[in-house]
Structure formats: C-alpha cells, structure tokens
Length: 225
Image (cartoon, rainbow, N blue to C red; front, side, top):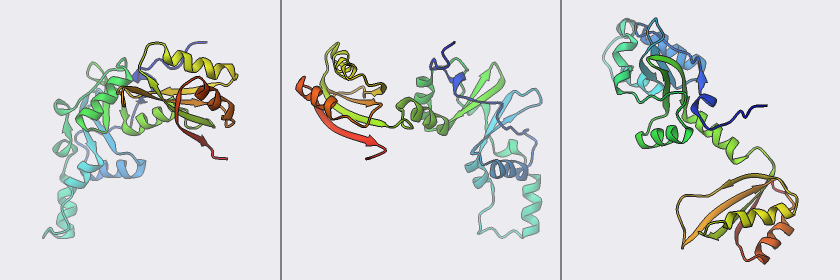
C-alpha cells in the first residue's frame, strides 16, 4: 500500500474549486460566496485558465457604503452592471504555486505575504486552491489533536541524538507516539520539545524521563481526566 502523505500541496489542495467567469456580475459572485460559504473565488476564462481572484473582502469593498446618496434602484442597476473583472485581484498580482510545491513553502508564502489563499496551477490552468483553513486542518492532523493522549513538554540540551534517547524512554513503556513538535529556536540554550503519546496514563513515563535527567516542563492530557 502506498504512502498517502508525502508533504506536497497536491495531497491537501481543494481540487476543482468553485470558479466564476470574469464577465460575471457582482451579484453572481456575491451569491456564490454567500451560498457556498467560501471566502476565495478564483476567476477563470473559458479554458479554465486563471485570470484573477475574488474574496469576500473584495465583495464588501465593491459594494457602495451605507452613506451613498444613490437610490435603491440606482444601486441595483450599477451593481448589476459591475463585472467581476473590475474588482478582482488580477492574476499578475497573485502568488501561485504548483501541485508539487512542498507544504512548508506554501505556509511560508501565505505567512510572509499575509494572504489566505494560494491558487495551484499547471501552466496557466487552475487545478485547485489551498486556503488558510486547509493549512489549519493539516496541522490538526500533523499534531494528532483528534487522537486522545498526553502531551509532555521537555527542555532538552540542543545536542545531536538527544531526541532519540528521549524516545527510547517512551518506547520502553510500549506506548505509541502521536507526534513530536519542536520549534526551530532555542530557549536558554535548550530545545523545547512537545511529545504527544497515545495514552492518558503518563505517570511512569514522566517519572522515567525525569529519572533519566530530562527536564519536564508541563504535562497536558486530552480529553482531561
């Protein structure tokens, strides 16, 4: 059986997302975003080539303010004539990626550019999108949040092989490992490591870790006993 997670965007992207044509009206785009409960609406041409992106914020900004002097009839007329191409973010200003982009790169792009969505392209053709919600779902899975267990947070010397030795202590207790998370930075020359193990009975493991000289900073169980 093949491995279904290798860390590429193609494994997590929303394939065949809902799209709109550039000559669609403001009302059409607003209805799609509201009715489908989405925040990002790719704009494509008839060949399904990406030409832009409309967000829920674009819809709000395109609508006249409450202070407008226009009548209801005039508002409906103008908004009915307003095309998506007039208020979308054009493709030239979008950051896009390919299906073979590693997930870490996508996260970095979204963080650095403060954007909530990345279109995924094969040449000019739109294959899918990935949003900040998709990234959050990914991290829920990677951290094993949905699996009951215990998180043991330790301060470890930043030395080669130290994590191997810690995990050997856990292995002695015949407990499955859910995840291991460690920031890239140091705290007082120590590396902070959060180990998630698939048990709520952690007392003997923690005792063994402390007996082996490791500093246990905190212990958290979910669901709590």
